[in-house]
Image 1 (cartoon, rainbow over the protein chains, first blue to last red):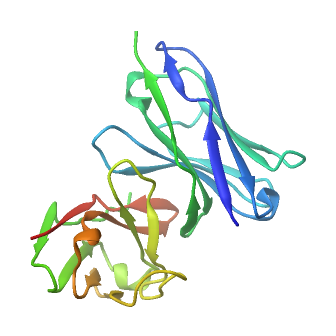
Image 2: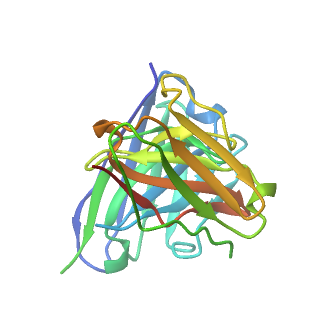
Length: 115
Length: 105
């Protein structure tokens, strides 16, 4: 059974850093496109970043230069390192398998950026 | 950047048919995917590549795509279909629609 479990969210001050994790089971992270998608409170879905199976990474303009996506193949885990956090980064962050479409999603982890 | 426009809300009587549109420039040339999201839950893929249903999704959900509009159709609507629905395409990057809240009366 495919499962994605996010962790690492919390309350952080503006300018701070946070690393999100997404532990996968039932499939191999490194063999798939893996993405992060976020949803601000009461708002729609926003794609954040993707890592290809070959290791290439891409980012939304809103996070480029501040966020870094990576994976640990030995742990079958996806990460999102978030630096220089802003209030507008407040959202539930989902990891999802895919790029063209997302067939599996985690339950999400809430990141709140506030002083 | 590419934009996808959806109606803010759609209401449907129990047992009737709901149609949710997703407008985009020449969207008919792209693969459109649809997600259902219930309150407090992660999105669920209900239609991929315009009209294909993932395993476990009822046949009541169907999709079409032509010209500048893609459509998600929910037949014989049930109370459990109440949710937000998002369309999504790939156009240099992943783009989501604005989302539609479906209410079953």
